[in-house]
Length: 96
Image 1 (tube, rainbow, N blue to C red):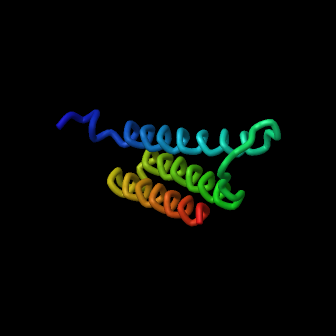
Image 2 (image 1 turned 90 degrees about the vertical axis):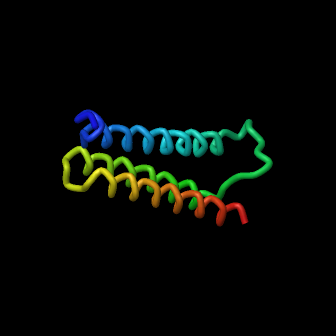
Image 3 (image 1 turned 45 degrees about the vertical axis):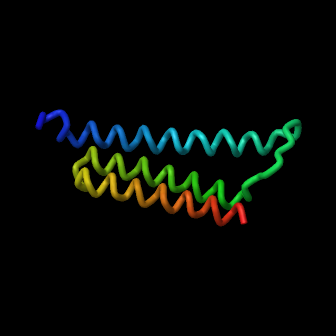
C-alpha cells in the first residue's frame, strides 16, 4: 500500500473537508430560514440546526486531531461516522 494512502495529513484533510461541507449546508439552511421572503412547507427547529452545526465543528476538530496524529486514522473516521449518525438521528427527532 502506498505511503500516501497511509498519510494522516491526507485523511485528516478529507475528514475536515467532509465536515465543512456538512457544516456549510446547514449554515446556509439556517440563513434561508431567516429570509422572510421564502415560505417553507417544513422547517427544522432551531435546536436541530444548532446541534447539527456543532457536530460539523466537532468533525472538523476530529480531522485536526488526525492531522496532528493524536488520534489514529480509523478512530477519526469512526468518530466522523458516529457524529453523522447522531446528526441524522437528531434531524429525524426534529421532524417528529
